[in-house]
Length: 339
Ligand code: PHE
Image (cartoon, rainbow, N blue to C red; front, side, top):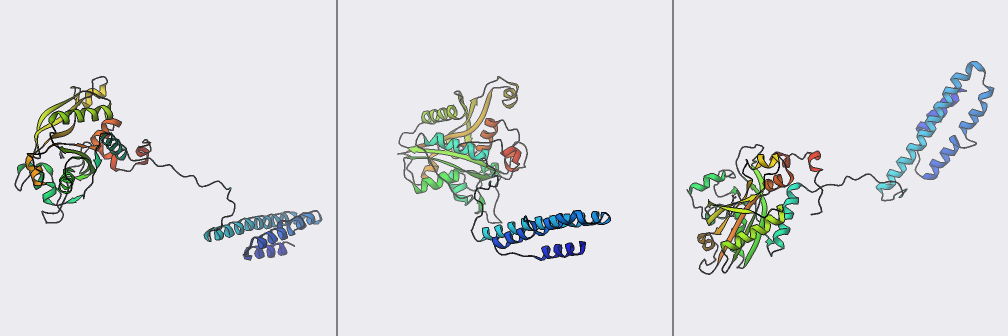
């Protein structure tokens, strides 16, 4: 008898089906109430004692083979149908989908954009691969100007006229070339500098620069605009402007915000002063306006620029800039934002 059971098992293994009915008939034949399996179960009593063990094992194998086969045939048919766009049980629970989070750099960039768009600034973008004119010369950095060294430029191959932009000021030049004042624009983007990678600096980072050109734009306008910005972004309302130097602005200043000295971290990040440098700014140099075909006797303007990573590190208290580029899910998952 176990021989016939074995034959059934080989039959089961060889069986194939093309329709649901065929699978169902197969199931009834083996596993149905009056099916083959139940037939054997009914015979069990009559089997001589010494054969019971082998017989029982064989029947169990038959049962497993038939049950597995039915399951397998059903799955095969379903996936074949899904390939054809026919879905079986639509009430089946779906695959869990992980909700992504925006990258902290994007969140901070979007916040900055929103703050400035509320006071009439639009967003402008430009190429990451630049020419000498837009990255340097138009910005009052002629060839051999010593300040070019500070920029640690990456050149593409050996052509000195093809480089990776070292700041997004290049976008402002492009914008002034293409648009007449009044101009109110901010330019977010990725910039590149040949610097050693450490916890504090990276060779690829992001900047947002702002530009405002119109009649009678003054340094007071610049200071009030920055004060509005720092209040909105950091909730801090004390800033100071320290004289500084940029080739494309005159006068130029470094902007510090008063961060406070409430916690130990405040002491550490402000080196005990309570003040934090957050950006550079100044009145657009008349030479730059002239280079972009804007008459400096009629118009004046201010510009400012900041590193997004630095701002994000302050806002989220992130101690190492490299975290932004490592794509570590445990880090990225912590940033959920609606912006
Ligand atoms: N482009 C400057 C930098 O990369 C920042 C800046 C922009 C300073 C505009 C003044 C005005 O450091």
